[in-house]
Amino acid sequence: MKILLINGSPKGDRSNTLKLSEAFLEGILEIDKDAEIRQMNLSEKKIAPCRGCFACWNKTPGKCVMTDDMQEGIEGELWADLMIWSFPLYYFSVPGLLKNFIDRQLPMNLPFMEEQEGQTGSGGHPSRYDMSGKRHLLISTCGFYTAKNNYDSVTKLFDHVCGAGQYESIFCGQGELFRVPELKARTDEYLECVRQAGREYAQKQAISEDAKEKLRELLYPRDVFEKMADASWGVEKKSGEKEDPVLTFTRQMAALYNKDSFDQKERVLEIRYTDLGKAWQIVLGKDGSTVLDAGSREATTVIETPWDVWQSIARGEIRGDAALAKGMYRVTGDFSLMIHWDDFFGAANAAAGKEKSGKNSDGRTAEKEKQPQMIFMLAAWITFWVAVPVGGNVGAIVTLAICACLPLAAWNRKLTVYDRLSFGIVALLSVLALQKGCVNIALLAGYLGFGLMWLLSCLTKEPLCAAYVKYNYHGDDALENPIFMKANRILAAGWGILYILIAIWSAFLLPAGHTALMQILNNTATVLMGIFTGWFEKWYPQRVAAGK
Ligand SMILES: Cc1cc2nc3c(=O)[nH]c(=O)nc-3n(C[C@H](O)[C@H](O)[C@H](O)COP(=O)(O)O)c2cc1C
Image (cartoon, rainbow, N blue to C red; front, side, top):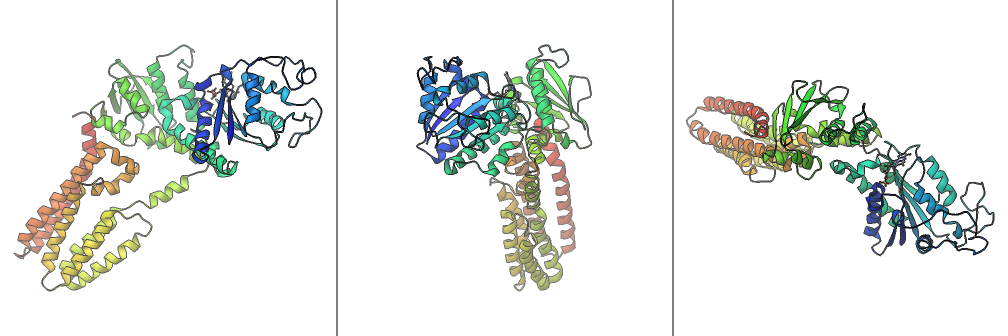
């Protein structure tokens, strides 16, 4: 396929729209490796406005009286199979540069009056050349929050130029966001949809309804976007005067607040840019966020960070949790804001944008329902420890039955490797307990096995508790979080050591007939460790964050 990309943005290679066009071409090239691409940046070309002399129709048919770069444009159009018209929306239409280019196509038409296929019934001129196999695609970004209702003039224009229904289009609102590095995660997601549209186009010469639906999704909900856009100009809203760029940055961050994450607790986040000696507060409330001067309110969470560190985190160049673990910045006060940062800011807003267009919410609920639950794994062990000492052989058979039933009971859940391992080990221990005189050995082996499973899990990429708890912290992403991982390794090691100790003291108490004492000791130790776990998982991240 031969493709002519006509870049009508006056910004040339810095065009937001061009990012979409390039993603589309990448998609095409993945499928059609031999596709040939020519790009014309109209901002770099000398194309004078049409003089309206009609010489190209009568005096020198097919040839313009002016000699400039438009000749390259016409040759390109005759050469290409597909024309990609890439341009920003200017005053609800195409920019002057592109309108100029369109006007200068006059030599490509014959002067006669003749309606073409797909034209609107208002009259037309036939083409001088055979353009029948040529295809057109419009890619455009605009500055308002949505493309809807903003492209009426553009579609009317191209209905006349290419014929209604004879071209595909990708129109995207919030175009200026494509140049904001801090929002790359969301804009990259959109660009991937454009890339997918490119792949489809290379295969079917069309973009599916499914892909179009995704391309119509807002990058951010309207209120978040408009707040962010207003903040991005770097001028004070009331006075119109230039404001401190660090304040602008803070305002943009505040604009990313997702008020749906409000949990009946107003938070005051104070950000202190330590190297600049500047600080502001962001109040996160029921109705949205407000930026205040530092010290205006009592801060609930304080972040102390060098300016460049915070910028790098916002741009996704470094992970916030990793930087925190390395002590590159400090956090004091209410740490829940940091733990659920993505719910309060950023990613959650993008998701909210999708939800508003009726997408994904069901998918996420279903995903949540499937999350593994530690209770299934524990049920196998607890049944074994209760049923076998009390019921002997009957207890062992009951445990075996429970081990067989648990995977069925958890049919709508993901099972972790620890669930499967536990069902298997407990079943084997129950079989051992059924052997004559082996109940005590089976019980002791159970304590030891349970302890070793916890302890050895520390050496894996996913310590036992992390395999379940990670779902409360954005799933697999939590495994990249050094603070989360360290806390979970410590806890898994703690539980492992405790159960090995339980196995050791039970090895003395059980043969001596102190079964009741052993049960009391084991249960008390487990409850205390449970209380410690609940406390530690809150205390530890807070301590690291405070740089202690
Ligand atoms: C002169 C001018 C007129 C504009 N008119 C509109 C408009 O009518 N509607 C709109 O949504 N955005 C409008 N915009 C915003 C641009 O369409 C938007 O910033 C776009 O993403 C720029 O794309 P580019 O970087 O590819 O040039 C206008 C921008 C300029 C400079």
